[in-house]
Amino acid sequence: MKSRSRAAVWAIAGVCLSLGCGSPAYAQTRTPGPGAVGKGAIVTARASGTFEVKLTPQASDDKGEILLGRMSIDKQFHGDLEGTSKGEMLTAGTVVKGSAGYVAVERVSGTLNGRAGSFVLQHSGTMTRGALQLSVTVVPDSGTGQLAGLAGKMAIRITDGKHFYDFDYTLSENP
Image 1 (tube, rainbow, N blue to C red):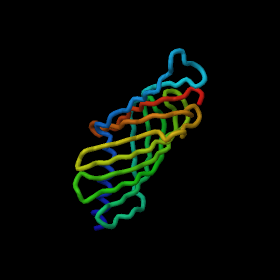
Image 2: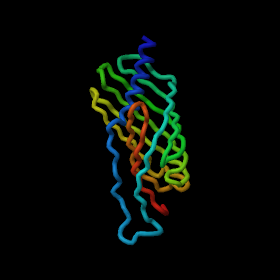
Image 3: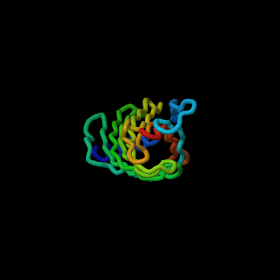
Image 4: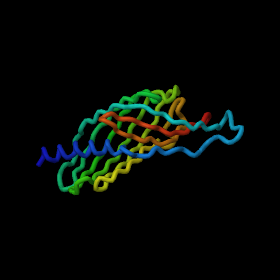
């Protein structure tokens, strides 16, 4: 039973990472008004690129019909977002094929379109009998350095085994 549980948790993690397939990128609607420059101006932008992810299983509760798992996350981002992230993921798999869920939090450090700092992403993903839904959002007020005032949503997609991101965000010029 223990090897089945461990394999199931890994399968859930794979499914969770693929939850980004077909996930829409959410455009931000806040834009500067006419003549808005200087203090309080808001920049609306999109960052795109690729990333590699390494998941490492942690001790978990793998008893019962609902399989719970926990993993550490290490990522390398490339493209408009250059940096690394570290985080934690919790997964749940059910006895119904194609149904699972995960939540994760990761701290991203690096440069976003040339601005240095860090911010936190919060993930919430579900798969209901194969129907995927994913939300990856910047935790409010988590931006530091030149990324203070950052808000936005990230879409993840996997094509031919390669991970891609599209990050629609706003950044207050002087939060």
